[in-house]
Length: 298
Image: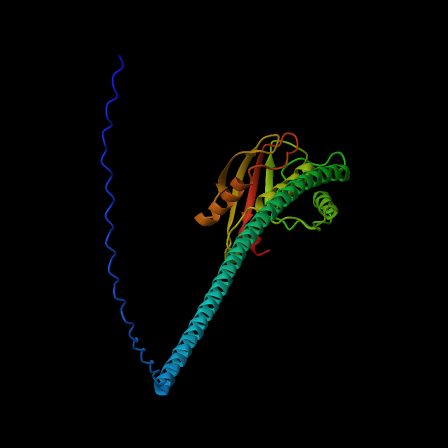
């Protein structure tokens, strides 16, 4: 069976919100007038200070310009001095180099001159040696020609013996002296005999021996040195000389002294310095050379 309806409960009604109280109006501030700022008072320009500052600025500017000018001048002076010093140094160096070059040139020239002189001296020595060799050859040729001429002029049967002669050796009469004079004349030596005398031994024709004797006397006397003051004295010495077939002097000795030691020594020394004579005629190996003090003045 259906349940009988239950009676509806009555729900309470919702409460209405209470009205909020309206805020009280705030009192607006009454605007007040703001105070205006006082106008700034511009200071009056101090012309004196301005003039003083301008004057100082100009003086500072002038000082700065003067300093710059001084610095530029000093820099220019320093540069000029440096340039002049450089030029002086370069000139000095150039002069030193030129001096060194000149000294080196002088040394080189002196060296070349010494070498040239040495070469010239060597050439002179060589020429002198050649001349001496040519003269020695001409002497031998002259001897050979003189011997040949003497033999041809003397003819057969001419006597034998020594070619003794203190004499003056005139070119006339004696075929020996004449042949020798002719040979000398042909050689450019002029005429005349040789003072003093030579004696020979060991064979050989008289004419040939005489020619050889005079030539030997001349060759030895070329090496004889004694003061000419000795000519005032009457001195004479004889030196004996041994030679081989080629004319080489083997030995010598004083066989007749003069009585004055230094005179005798000079005669022996002249033989020692001769060393070699022209080749003698066949069979001749001993000669006696007479030295007279009177030959010294001739």
